[in-house]
Length: 217
Length: 285
Image 1 (spheres, each protein chain N blue to C red):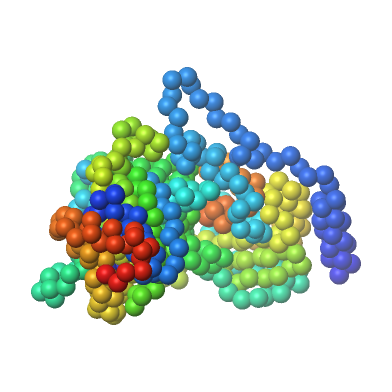
Image 2 (tube, rainbow over the protein chains, first blue to last red):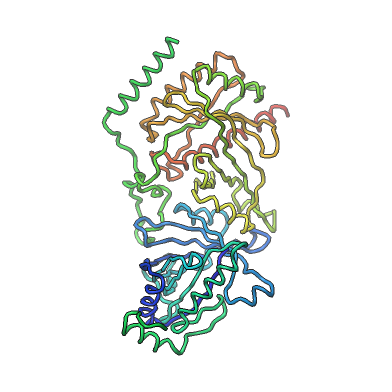
C-alpha cells in the first residue's frame, strides 16, 4: 500500500519549488519522463471491470516497463480524519512486451499520458517521493513526441510513500509533516479533492528565488 | 570406467574446439530490419515493432547457463510411474552424478473469469504462469498461441489476483533432485498437482554450465543426450526422454540463453504432457 497526496502549482513557480525541495531533501532531483498507458478490461472479462497501468520509463537508455495496480482507498471514520490517502498499490517491473500480453488477455486501451518533470526520493520518517510533472495527452496513438499538455501552465505535484498495514500511521504522519513545509507554495490534499493554487505562492517563490532557498518559510 | 573416461575426454575436446572456433555469426535481433509498408506510421522507439526486436541487447542480459528441458514420453500403452523416476535417478547416479539437493518449479494454468461463458473463445485458452528456482524473485507468463513470454517481478501474481480477470485453474509442481555431472547439471523430477501426489509426468533439465549460446552448445548437448539416452535404454524402461526445442525466435528470444527460454520450454513440455495424456485417454476410448 501507499500514502499519497496531490496538489497543483503554476509552472512559473516550479523553479522555486525545486529549490525548496532541494533544500529540504538534501538530494539531487531525478529527471522524469514516463509514458503511462491505462488499460481497462474488455466488456466480458472479469465479474467487475478492472484497470491496470503500464508505465514506460523513457529516461532510461533502454526504456523499462512497470505494471502498476492502484486499488481502493482505505475507508472508515479513521481514514476520513487523516489528510493523506492510504490505498493499496502494487508494482511489478516487466519486460517490454507487457502491452502485447495485456492486449492478448483482453485488456483495451483506455487512455495514455506523458508525464515530464522531476522527482526527489529521500528518507524523512518514511521513504518519500515527490514528483513534479506536467501531464500531457497524445493526439495520436502512442505519439509521445506530439504530446499536448492537458493543463497548460499548471503542473501536478504528488507526494507518495510506501506503507504497510502495520506502519501506515507513522507514514501518514511523516507525509503530513513534510507537506507543511511546502504549504506556502502549494497545498497538498487527497487525490480527487481539488484545492487549487495557493495565494501565497508568488511571494513564497519570490523569496526562495532571491536567496536560493535560505529563507525559512 | 574406461568408457566414462573416454567420454569425458571427448567432452573436453569438444569444449576446447568450441572455444577455439571462430565466433559464430549469430542471428541477432539487433540486426533484423523489419520492412515497413509505405504510409505506415512509425511507433516510438520504446514500442517493439515485432517480437523479434524484444532482446535487442543480449549483452545486457544476465549470463546464465543454457539448458534443455525433456519430458518422459511413455511407450504406447504404458504410463508414467514412480518406478521409472527411481530408475532414471539411479541412472544419473550410475554416471557418477553427484546429488546436490532439491529443486522445484511451479506452473499455473490461468483461466479468464467471464461474465458470459459463450464468449470464452475470444480469450486465450492456454495462459500459463511459471516460477523458476533459478529466479526466485521473478515470474513468467506464457501465451503459446500468441508466442508471448513475459518476465516480471513476482509481485505480478498479486496484481493478477487484484485484477480479478483471470484466476488460477490448476497448478503443477515440477520437483526432484539436482545432480552435478562435470560441466553438466541434471535435474530430474516428477510432475504432480500442487495438492496431490498423483504423478502426471517426469521431466529432466540438462544444463550445460560453460556456454550461454544455444547455437554453440548444440553439438555438445546432442552428444550428451546421445550418451544419456544410451544409458537409459540399457534399463529397458517403457519410454524415453523427449526434447523438442521450441522456436525461440518466435517469442522474440535471441541465441543468448535466459530464464525466459526456460519458461518457454516448460510451457511446451506441458503441452506435450497434455498431448500424451490425451492420446492415452483416446486409446482407452
